[in-house]
Image (cartoon, rainbow, N blue to C red; front, side, top):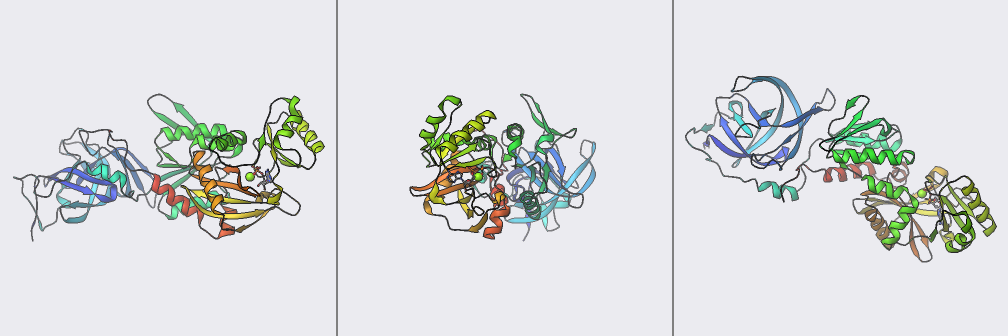
Amino acid sequence: MNFTLGWEEWLSLPALGLPAIRAKIDTGAQTSALHATVIEPFGPPEKPQVRFLIQPNPLDPSLEVTCSAEVVDQRLITSSNGQTEMRYVIESEVEIGDRRWPIELTLTNREKMAYRMLLGRSAISEDMLVDVNSSQVQPSLSFDAYKRTRRAKPVKRPLRIALLSREPNNYSNRRLVEVAERRGHVIEVLDTNRCYMRITASQAEVHYDGVALPRYDAVIPRIGASVTAYGAAVLRQFAATGAYCLNRAEGIVSSRDKLLAHQLLAQAGIPMPVTAFANSPKVTRDLINLAGDAPLVVKLQESTQGKGVVLAETRKAAESLIDAFRGLEANFLVQSFVRESSGSDTRLLVIGNKVVAAMQRTGADGDFRSNLHRGGSAMAVKPSKGAQAIARRATRHLGLSVAGVDVLESDNGPLVLEVNSSPGLEGIEGATGLDIATLILTHLESRVRTLGPTKA
Ligand code: ADP
Ligand code: MG
């Protein structure tokens, strides 16, 4: 049966996330061309990729789609107006009517052309007829298709990802890099402190070692506690470039500051140990009363890995501890000690509003702190429904999408102790045997959008 094309047709390029494009069918041209702006090559030399933007509807520049594809060639192309340029060549399947076949496409800026795409001779096989006297022989499509795509499953494409961390070689980062690469993405580890920024009203830029960084589809922040403030600024800048941030700066900042985190969780009605805080040295006694008398836990506000967490068994001990911290001008909080949790807590890993893994951590002999960095041990557990519910709520309320939530089981039910925005993967993968890095990457893939802003 013959397959006829008119001189213009609607087509779709499903693998690029382009459900509807109007193309000119031009047997006078050898190669097919697709409109593309902000064309950025990326990836290793043995597997080069290209990332580009396209506005498929010439009448609606606010509809923008981000595409990426493998580069199959680079070629010198002379266009109909006689200009020669070097273009990237990609391969994709085209769909017209009930036919679907692979074609080669060159990428070029066609902003000034009437059609966003040109289907050339090499894309038209011998069993197809081109009727230059008719337009649209094949079924029509509409740009409304982009509204439907917005809700449909995201297009699987190679992503350009930045991992923000000062420790490229730690277990968690190595795992994330390994899994991202296995899934066909290109991931670059950037040292947070080496990023710097150009802030203007019109364009957000992040620079690194003397060059402007390209656009990333996504950023995975693994920002250490020592660089939270600067790391958050860098992350906000990446967000301004349009990158999807696995955890946003506000969430990281709120969870890092124990006092702020407690206030936010309290606002949301999430149960936690009674906590007291003051700036004035005159209220030490009252502070102890407010926290519920000894034994008490005194914590440095920015403690991690249990380093700044001390147990005061008696009132006297609590007073001297508080005085000592004050003398060092350290910010700290005082908390009632949940004795019945007896040196163990549960770490629940939340990804995208789901608890995907949990482990019970028990402190080394005689230590009430269960941190694995302090020599604690871990085993997989099935957390209680209550613990799962407060872990999910705490994560959501702090504005995080990936978090490790530490929960203490008290006589009055589960209490949230802490929400960690860069949870380590080694302990939880080891204890549960689950591939958490893959769960994080698949979540990220589902969140990175291909479609840019459309008019409301
Ligand atoms: P860090 O951020 O340094 O890990 P945490 O607040 O998580 O500080 O405390 C470290 C560990 O100490 C917890 O994992 C828990 O085992 C123990 N711990 C902390 N606060 C309490 C408390 N109020 N009651 C009982 N145990 C606690
Ligand atoms: Mg902790």
